[in-house]
Amino acid sequence: MPSSLTIKQLHAKTGDLVRKAGASRTFITITDRGIPIAVLTSPSALKPRRRKRTLLPEYIALMSKTPSTDVMDDLDAVRGDR
Image 1 (cartoon, one colour):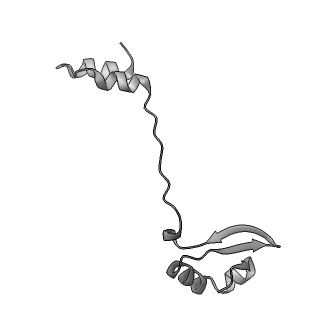
Image 2 (cartoon, rainbow, N blue to C red):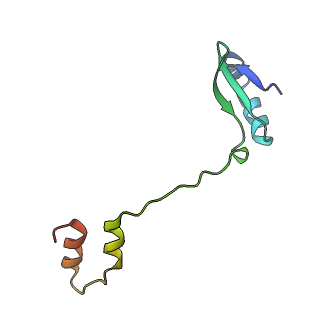
């Protein structure tokens, strides 16, 4: 299997190339006029991205409060009316 091919070659053999890339952990570079523009590979060949979350101080403060028995008070607190 080639490690690099043109868009024209990709269009001619898409199904076969996708199946081959999906079955192995290889990377196939797709080029346009000699310039790499895409990579075809199996999802298992990619490292999973870990999403970083940052909690806002306002959210932490809101979650640390004990909920009241009045739903409207809680809604006003979430909306920032109070």
